Amino acid sequence: MTYTDLVSFYEKRKAEFSAQLSEVNRKINFVANTRIAAALAFIVSLYLAFDLSFWLYVAALLLVLFIALVQRHTNLYSQKTHLENLVMLNGGERQAIQGDHSFFSKGNEFIDPHHPYTHDLDIFGEGSLFQSINRCNTLNGKRTFATRLRGALPSKKSIQQHQEACAELSAKTDFRQHLQAAGMEMNEQPGDHAQLVEWTNHPSFLFGKPLFKYLLVILPVVVIALVIGAFFFPQLKSFAIAGVLLHWVFLGVYSKKVSAFHEYISRKKNILEKYAHLLTYLRHEKFESELMKGFASTAYEADRKVKSLASLVSALNARLNFMTNVVVNSLLMYDLQCVYRLEKWKEENGKNLIAWLTAISDTEVLACLGTYQFNHPDFCFAEIHDSLLINAKDLGHPMLQSNARITNDVKVGENQSVLIITGANMAGKSTFLRTLGVNLVLALNGAPVCATEFRCPIISLRTGMRTADSLKDHQSYFYAELDRLKTIMDELRSDKPLFILLDEILKGTNSTDKQTGSIALVKQLLPHPCLALIATHDLALGELAQQHPHRVANFCFEPTIENDQLSFDYKLKSGLAQKMNATFLMKKMGIIPA
Image (tube, rainbow, N blue to C red; front, side):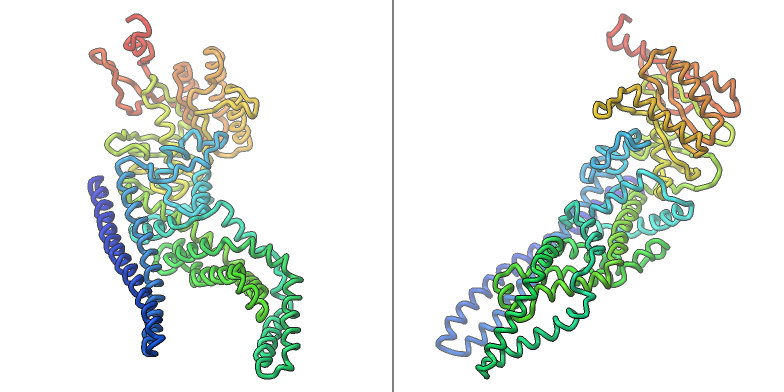
C-alpha cells in the first residue's frame, strides 16, 4: 500500500464512520423527541384516568414505552461516543501518515535523562518514537509499552511471537480501531489499576466465615417473615422490631469496615465496565498467532466476570441512598450482603483479574505494533541471531517521511566491531547513530524496522549523545558524561555484550585532552564483547583503524561544496572525512571575513 493509498484508506474510513455518526445523531434526536412525547402523554393519561380507568392501562403502556426509550437513548449515546472516537482516530491516523503525530500521546511522563538510551534516541516526548507508535489508551497499556521501549524482549522466541502477532493484527484494522475507540472512552485515574490489584490481595472480613454464610441468608428471611406476619398477627410486632434491631447491631459492628471498603471500591464501577468492554472485543475476535490466541483464551468470559463485578460495586453504591440505607438494611442487612458478594467475587476471580487486565494492556501494545506495520508496509521484521553482528540494508530513520528519508547499508561485527564515523557538521553523523539505535529498539520488541533487511542479536543498548548536567544531583556536564562512560565500561568488564553509540565524547574538555581520552576509551572497548559506533570530528581517531584493522573501521559523511553552495547527500562512505564546513559556513554567514 503506497502513501497515497494509506491517506485514502483513512479518509474513506473517516467518511464512513462520519456517515454512521450522522445517522445515530438522527436516531438520538428522534428517540429524544419521542421520549418527551411519551412523558407528556403519560401525564395526560394519568389525569384522564381519574375519570375513566381505561386511561390507567394506557398510562402503564406509556410508562413501559418511556423506560424502553430511555434505555434506547442510552445505547444510542454509547454508539455515538464510540463513532466519534472512530472518526477522530482515523483523522489522527491520516495526519500521522503525513508526518503529524500530534493526535497521539507524547509519553512525556516517561522521559528519563538518566536512562541508558531513551533520552538520546528521542524514545519519549514531542516527536518521539513513542508518539509515532503508541495507540494505547489505558494507563497500564501506556506504561507497558513504555517499559518495552526501555528494554528488549527476553528471548528470540518471544520476539518472533510478537512479530507474528504484529503481522496478524496489521490485517485486523477493524479490531484494532474498535479496541482503540473503546479505550478512548475510559476516564481512568492514575491509581485505578493498582488499587484494583491491591484490593484482590486484601483479606476478606466476611466471606469465608461460616457464621455469615448462613446468617446472611437465614436472618433476613426470618426478619422479613416476622415483619409480614406482624401485619396479620400483632403479637409478632415486638419480635419483628427485635429482628430489625439485631440487623442494625451487626451493621453497627462492621460499619467502619464497610465504609472503608466502600470508599476504596466505590469509584471503580465505571472503569470496570470499560475494562469489560475491552475484554469483549478481545474475546470475540478470532486469532491465529500464538500470543493473541493466548490473550483471547485468557479473556474467555472475563468480560462477563468483570461486568458482574461492576454491577456488584454499583449495588454497593446504592447504600448512599437514604431510603435504601434505612429500609433495605433493616430488612436484609444490605451493606453486609453487598460486601459479602464482592468478597466472594474476589476470592473466586481475584487472581484472574490481574491476568485479565494484563491481557488488555498487552493486546493494546500489540495493536500499536500492528497499526505501525500497517502504516509502514515497506518496513521489515528483524532476523534475530546469536552472532555479535548487526547487518542492515537500506536502513533509514523511521520518524522521517519516506520522501525525505535517506537510507544506508551498515554492517558492524565479525571483523570490525568498532566503527569510527567522521564528517562535517550537519552531515548526518548523529542522525545515523540514532537511526541504528531506534531500529534496534524496534527490532528487539518485535516491531517492524525501517530497512529492507535487518539482522541483529539480543543485545543491550547504551548511548552517550546528550549527557546533561544536573543541579539536583550536583553534577557538571563533564562529570555526567564521565559517569555515563564509567557505567558502560563497568558493564563491559563484567563481559556483558553491549551495543554502544557515542557522539563526540569528552566534549567538556580541551581538544588535546579530548583526543587523548577518546583514543584511550576506544582502545578500552576492543578487548570486550561489544559493537560500537563513535561519531567524531577528530580525524586522529581514524588512525586506530590502521593500528587495529581487524577491530576498527573508518566511515564518514561528506558534504559537497559546488558553486559556493553547501549540500549533503547523507550517504555513509568508507574511509575518513576529507571536508569540514565550519569555516565555510562562518564565512557564508558573515561571522568571519570571507
